[in-house]
Amino acid sequence: MRYFKLTYEPLIVEETMTPLQHDALGAHVLFVGTVRNQSKNKRVVELDFEAYEPMAVSELELIADKIEQKWSIEHILLYHRLGKVAVGEIPVIAAISSKHRTEAFEACAFLMDKLKETVPIWKKEIFEDGSEWVSATP
Amino acid sequence: MKLKLLAFGFAADILGQRKLEIDLPESATTADLRIQLDGMYPGLKKIGTYVFAVNQTYAQGIQSLNELDEVAIIPPVSGG
Image (cartoon, rainbow over all chains, first blue to last red; front, side):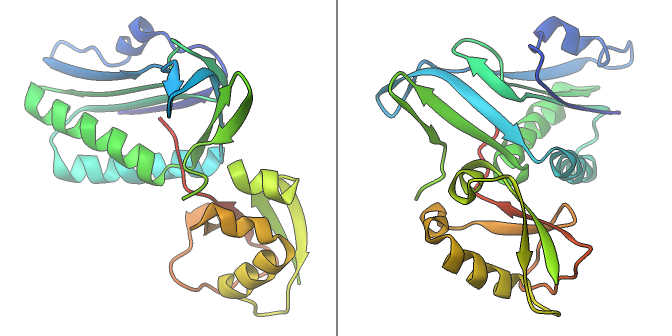
């Protein structure tokens, strides 16, 4: 199964496991991203995310197609926050479930790498004295 | 034709809006659109390498456009 969600509500790690758990599956790899308090030596207050929502979901579907071609896994999950996310909060959770751990580790890393390459989501770093879109300028 | 255009992230800041209509000659392509946008909004060049999505799919090379297309300016993504 595939579970994708773009949400303005807080992400809760424990709730992520509910759709994934199954007695036939022995491995669940979760990646949890949290907002760091620093970027380029500046103090970060929060991040502000926006997405081209329908396209973000269709790009996630394309990534999931590739994952299912490459690895034998059962579940693909990607939850991403939109709007403002404070330092210490969770903007992203990625998870892969499979029978054994090797595929799950590899597929989860692939999912996060591709998320950052192709899925139309943008973050703005909010500092104490201004803000900046991440990788907006060369 | 009047093309509906969506802008996100840094591109929306430069255009000062998230949705706009832009006049283009019939049978215009994504290359024509880029020339017109870069002329109207010189700040877009600061983004470096923005791309277009046509109907929620990344445009491949130079693609022809029509009035019913949903076209979006996609600056470098930065999710996660």
